[in-house]
Length: 221
Image (cartoon, rainbow, N blue to C red):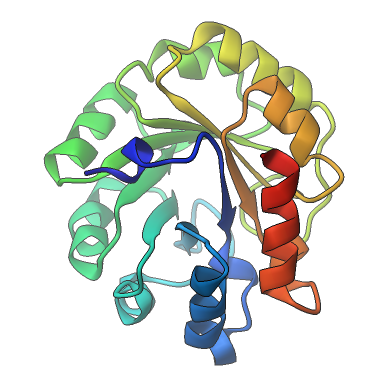
């Protein structure tokens, strides 16, 4: 069963890019104990985005916990990562609209690898253009920052962009937002049609990540 089939209507996804890597396993465990069901796992290749981030080896070290792993591929050649992500315990891969020539074929390749498929798009891309090629996707990710670095401020025009996206996407496709997500905007994003909320600094930058997660969960219910 894919994670999208057991969602509780909406989910907070702690982004492990913001975690304390010296305590990564412990922080994952604390969040699972607090009720977290999905983690966001960023892979950057140093080309599509400047930073080189975590990879499948790190994913494998934590994927045995009782949660799903939604892998965001900020990379130039996402297809080559599908099998390594699956083998490491990933459940879903999201690639960038701007990184591939054939979005439907890339979605099909993810599904063929046994993964749910997401399509992310940067602030410069138009929601309608992305929706037009994403009919077979499970997720469409509207970036609310420029991808690559955690801690950037949320772009307020995301609310309007999400509304446009929801108006043209089939209802079964989940809308995800990533970047600057926190207590100050999750309720409005939920009203716009977002069901997956990726949160890094607002969770891992708090004194207690589990308590911060609980507060965001309360706000979206």
